[in-house]
Image 1 (cartoon, helix red, strand yellow):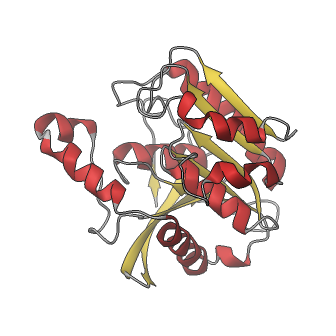
Image 2 (image 1 turned 135 degrees about the horizontal axis):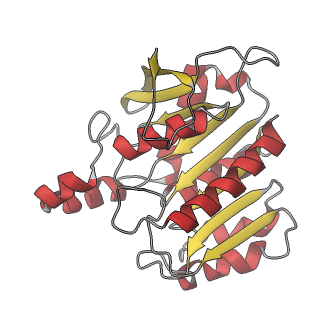
Amino acid sequence: MSQLRNGGYLPDMELLEEIIETATDDGEMAIVIKQPAITSVSDGAWPTVVIFHDGPGIRNATHTFMAKLAAEGFRVICPDLYHRQGRLLGINPEDRAADPSLSEKMQMWLMSLHDDGIQHDFDCALNATGADNTDRIAVLGFCLGARAVFRSMMRMPDRIVAGATWHPSFLVDDEPASPHQTAADLAQPLYIGIGSADQVQSIKMHQRFFEAVKPLPDVEVEIFDGADHGFTWPDHPTYDEEAARGCWDKTLALFNATLR
């Protein structure tokens, strides 16, 4: 049990943090869990949010964000999607600055991921944390996590009640199973925040997905003028406070509305 603060960035709430291990078809996987230390006044359990991390893996900024969300009254779960490459691999910006070769290594980790493996890891994380008995779950993904958010929402329309994606990647490809091909069938609320200046995965690259969900009343695509990829993270060179705050406010409102 520890008190987590970050210069006023986090609400002043005592949090519980644990890292557990679970078996998958491809070996052991770590799962990071953060939640308020106090018991929920409703039924003893805090609403569950599962996070799909982005390319740099589970790093300092991931922990800080999870703590911020947990301090709002959620149980936040993040499976280590890179467990096939090593345990809890994560690259901080200062690591890459000191060793530019880490960018190539990160790309290798990223390209090792695939839809079936991520969804298998998601299911294993739910089972290991007891969240497989929870009838309402929200999912949140950054960059490559956006595709995982969509896949999980389509697989579990009765249990995953909402999703959010920030500076998304890989929502459109040329394969028959590309997310945009079935996006019009999405039944749950989804929030997407993207920057107009995204240099990694531009709005144009996602256009077919955005067009597919445009008629859906519960899907919002918000474009932040001038924001680049990775605008979420305060320690990242492309951090955009306005975009990050805008995504945070919309996502928090959505999760509060659907999970409580």
